Length: 172
Length: 360
Image 1 (cartoon, each protein chain N blue to C red):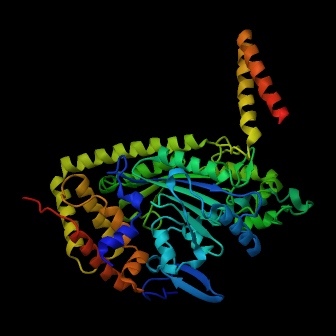
Image 2 (tube, each protein chain N blue to C red):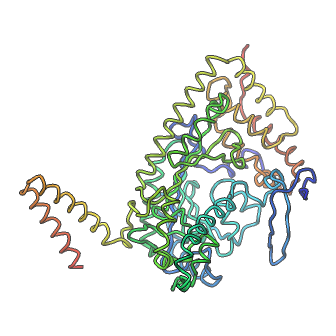
Image 3 (tube, chains in turn red, orange):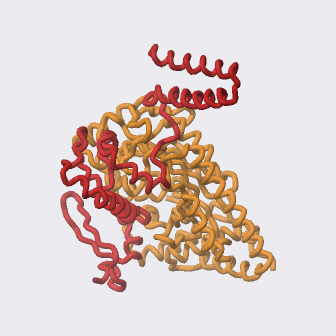
């Protein structure tokens, strides 16, 4: 099929545009697609989306043997099912992360170089207790090390600090 | 409208100052993706839910100011002409996606256009901070401040182990995308970029052309950004990118020196020819324009071209895109017509400069 714009090069981009309910089909070559204002260069939605979808599909095939007898996973908050998530490659709401939790580790590992846990910023309100929890867990590690090194005086200080933090949480 | 006035409107005020390492790094950008726990994410939300989230956010942000940034302007996407939307994309203030989802979508932009917050794009909120030159840490600090300010108003979707929850699994965790726009003409001319780009990928960073498609980088301008968002702190993500970009700057500088040492006459020839094309051509394709602009900018950086301001590359790369051309000439243009108008605009723009003829 030739490009409908320049009639010279073969069409490589095929898409349907819906404007106010009117459906229009476009067949363009790369160059004309770029030149044509309404197809944005670099929108890139095709590649990343399809790559991701393929990746998620792969996970599903691997797991297929197991979930013949399971019902389809569905998010209780927004109603998105796991197969739908795989198809569009996007979560529907924050609860989806809990609903599909068991299947997500391999996905995240692939996308984020093996990582599945957040170690960055914690929001002040939404993560009110988490900042403290993280602090306590670092202190506990320090405590463990001090005990191993038989630095008992310092260890006692750290222990008190941990207690103070934990009591503070219970007061809230 | 005079060209100067048009440029003043078209080029974001933040772009008009120069940042550190401005001879190579054109701009630094931080983007944070955030969602609200009270609503379904915009992509899959029903029309009704989208609308509710939209009004909820609008109520809390429309007339707000963030510290010294001044008041944000709330711009409804529904109320814009297609060409106005395109201009916002070409200024990198909104993503092409926001046009696709423009139903109940908006963008908040501060006065000097260095901060934009997209509402109801793929995520409920997308904070973007742009700085001139190499200023990733500054951009991260500002983004964090705006993020904290927003969190006072909204209940963020956040999970203890997964971090900030985003619509796309590729953004989960920090929701952070850090990127720099770099001009690397000497690494391209010496063909060293072929070896460097794959090495950069190995650090979990992505290299791509900004204005071209795929691997082709129009005007030798590349964007380097982080790929992974989960499992590393924001500071580490930015630091890793910063380290690689610092290496790139050194490599580009070395390549520029080598070109001057070993093939100065060829380099001069190339740069002056390109200047000639820009100054005198009557029809110019976007690709040729980008190549020549890159050459001229290199000439300015190396002191071979005098009297022409550095910002000409960034400016004309933006201005000669289809949306801006049609905006300036106030008519829909076919690709052939655009090539003619593009040449006109470039000539007019160069006329505003005080090009000093080389003495020899």
